[in-house]
Image 1 (tube, rainbow, N blue to C red):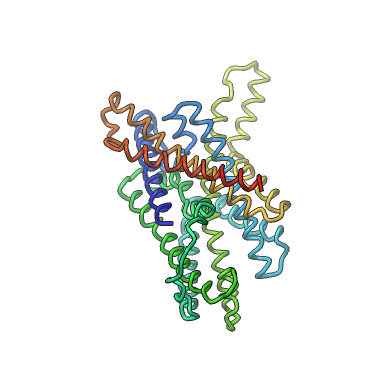
Image 2 (image 1 turned 60 degrees about the horizontal axis):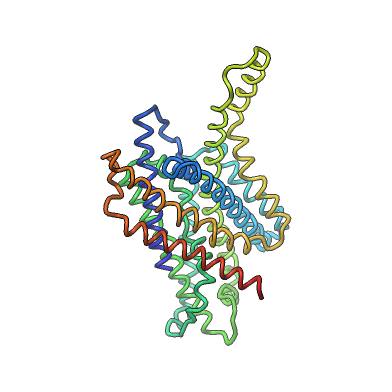
Length: 383
């Protein structure tokens, strides 16, 4: 888990460097809105060309939808246990709440709500883990492990630790200030890492108390105090909610950027009647761009999550094993390498100097994860 965290941290810092470099270049050429987001699709196209932009677009859209399906499906299951509302309806209701928050409140209001939710989530996690330790949750740390089981867990670990979809939004939100952005990425990535490591220690201890393989959460639920189950479900809901906010916000901004580019491509010279029609369509499009972008981001995911049973597990494996690894593992070092090749043309591009061995290393590591996942799936289908 620590190796995956370090790998993802390097990838996030590469994304930040590329994004900020492109923002500076854009600011030189034209006026730029402070909160204008340069998506990973634009980053790939600017550095790798059309093929990079196409690969990033396809992978990002697939990742966005699989992540949204996973979060919506999981939130529905949790709310079903809490309030006994059907999982499909619960998932739609939960996702719709955050959809309205982002659509109406905007980035700054969403950031404030997310800070409050994150603080509450950390508080609940600490309370649960203290309770687990009191229940004997540290007793199993001396046991042996099976390293052969590690490869199958990598997609889930990556899915749990990835925050890279927020990198373009973060760069815009902090105005391209590299020092603040790097600090935010480092400190922000440490929070889920420490929480997951602590929980793993507790889970190992709880599992050691059972003679058979049992979910540690189930063992924790057996504590006589009834409030434990509510605490665990509430924490799970907050964890899904904070993850959903980041994914939905970045997915929404991605579609909005693509719709803005599409609007600019409307032809300006037409016959009079065609010109009036296109002008009216362009005006309507400009007014409803945000609504259209949010609808495109949310509707397909809600349909799949409410109709496909156990969508969470399948979506998590696909998103973590393929989409996230390609988009946030293979592409960032490739984009940085391409920018390195331009240093001779642009002397100011020195962010990645002397970094070629590192870029090659993380790129190969990402490729190995993808290949390993392919082999795992082939073996699974073969059995």
